[in-house]
Length: 436
Image (cartoon, rainbow, N blue to C red):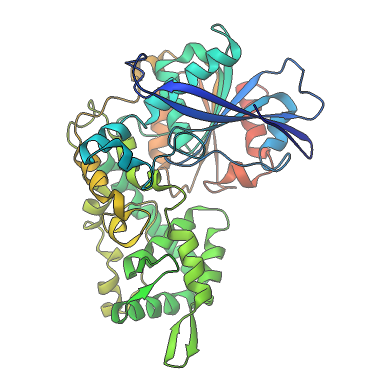
């Protein structure tokens, strides 16, 4: 068990053996990794534990350097556990390099079906009992998808919880994937409008890039094909606090004049690659729509819902925008089938992604009855203009969880927890304790 010291913190590595399928504890086991973080000088104090559940799906936990970001506030009160959720980071990685060992496409899909919130929560409960004992309880901080997992935790294992903090992660309890994306496209269009109002010169640049890619084949540094649709997916940036500025600075470097005339610059292509490649988090793409699958909501597969629903919003058609002289709209947190043909990190996973999209009868992730009887203190930050999680759906869910207190704010975007130097977490702690 490795221990490292950083400025103001002590880090301890932990690994745990957990069942792949918690319904079969004697069956195959996989390894899950977590990093304990405690303030220097408090290593031996009896501190309450705070489990952090990262956004995603498919995102590894933060790699801190000292008391950075929200840890600045958390370490005043807690011993923090940063969990690499199964399949991410150092926890039994699931990607194009490892999944072929599972067998054919059906076997890979069956394996990945155990990587949703229900399995993550079961891992957490096993880890809690090992670290705190059977009767020990800990606090949970869930960011984005981590908030979805927190709702699953409150539904099926509230006995392990002391208090719960959720940031930008109150999922719609009874919303299927199509409903999620039907609500999402108008929010994304609004973010586009605000971006172009802030940087009107980007309208012409985005149109020029799109027109350029219609006429030429352009490859990214990883060999992936850059298409107009891929450029549109840079709109994922628009849901972050500084995302609009990041997108603008990316676009302003788009073109230079080479020997053959105007072409896309290496700087632009390198930056686009860094934002679009799923090499570091392929499960984000592979599992993204399955996180909304619940048999009580819909017995159908999620079926590439973002792609299906997109046809209802023709303003996102880049060809139509070019022909009509309208701005090209960027898309948001949507995963499309074409991504599994243009991204080398995803292409080997194309068939298993299709198999998961067609999978039916996903187990329920929430128990509405239990949430209505909840006795665990819960505080949630709901971002008024959140591009990734619908505010109306979040407030519906908040009303369904007994005792949940919300803080609705337009001061931050979806990444408020990470950019607020602990202010968002501090507000939620005070809410849960009845101090605010």
